[in-house]
Image 1 (spheres, helix red, strand yellow):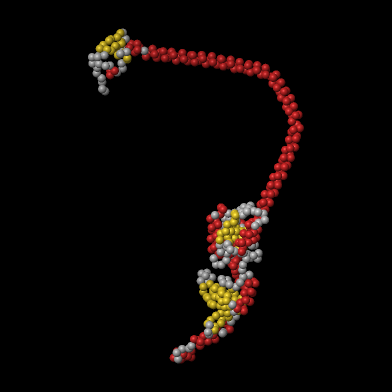
Image 2: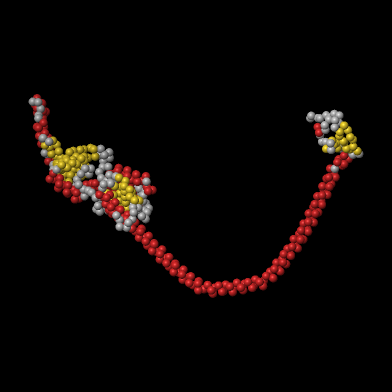
Length: 448
């Protein structure tokens, strides 16, 4: 009731001033319950201008929606100390988009308003979160069975046609190219740069787009190299990305990754077919592979020369042996063949007589067979001629007329049809016992 009375009195007097209201808030905020509290949050919009200004947010674990937000700052003197502490443990500067555990105090200034001051930081919490995210990606790729897939892609004996994913002006790309092109073995390589952003928020989509372009021309390359020089751990966090790691793990060409310094390790190092420490080391790996191939070719050449020399030496020995034995062998061959020739000469009369006797016997058999065949054919043909004679006799005109038939001829031709006889012509009709000659006065032809 007293508060309501005071409120009414202030209302009657025209209300309190803003300063008075802010002082009331300041007294409330000065409560010890909001001093030096350890809070887990995520940083965004970190800006360093002597002092460090930022926002702390909390996201919903499922939807990712921001459920809490507050402005915060780290005073300049404290920022240098906390940043060094943070970097020593995590390997990166304090910055945006990282999960942190910070010790904060609420502060309200009547003139400048509400703010939160960060007094301390627990870098082990951030380091653990970074490692947790990396482990989650690696475990997911392992469960999907693709984490080692790129390591099974066949690697050519010599990698000469090289697709490079990097930034053109980057020091790491320059070191790689200088090492590659100035190699002491004189091996010629054919590199092609596929430009990509290698730091910042656009790193992942840029590198993915470059890999897509490489895959469109995969027949033209032996491998793809993803290189980036050293930098802060924050700058390398983009390479701890699931989508990028999956793309590298399933890429159809062997992937060589050389990112950062020797101490730096990203998820891409786990999924790439070949992992090296730096861009320079990537070039050295490719050069060494070519040098080993050259050395192997040299060894094979030496083996070929040695084998050829041994073969020639053995061939010369065999030639000398044959040259010494040729006269003896020739004489033996001549004597053997002379002996065979004499034997053949002796056997010729016997073989000729045997052949003549055999042919005579064959001739007699053939003669008897011919006589028998001729007799059979003669008998067969005689029987056939007799049968034909009987048919001819049976079908002769005299036999036909003897059975009561007649034969009519006109102009020397036998008439078989009335239409063949012209009117007024003379016809001769033969009978069994004579013939009749008549002139045709009229003829009638049956139409049915």
